[in-house]
Image 1: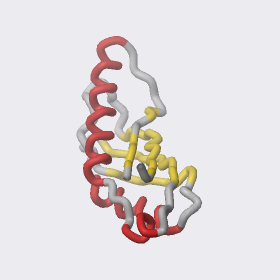
Image 2: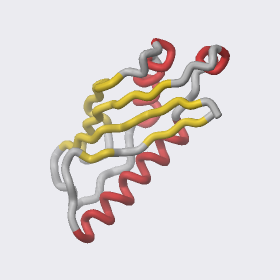
Image 3: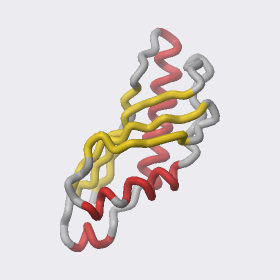
Image 4: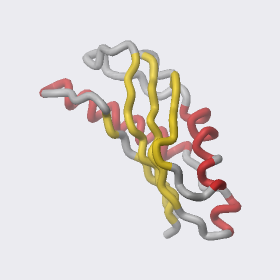
Length: 114
């Protein structure tokens, strides 16, 4: 089985700031990968799916809000998304050069059997 996640920032960064932002995005993907669960009932039924979640975090990494932009098409996997958001909260603190009070990004999630 495979679980994958990545981070797509809504706002861009440049130069050295981009390196910090890239490192931060990798740290988020690592946290998500460690805490993402493949629901047993989905494994038994060999259900796969992908979702896109819009996540807004505060400066301290606390998830302020999340919204499913694209669901997986499978209720069992869609129900896992809010549980995952609880498990990953708070996320790693954003780099100081990303100075917005809140940051919003798209978190693509996948549940794939291998």
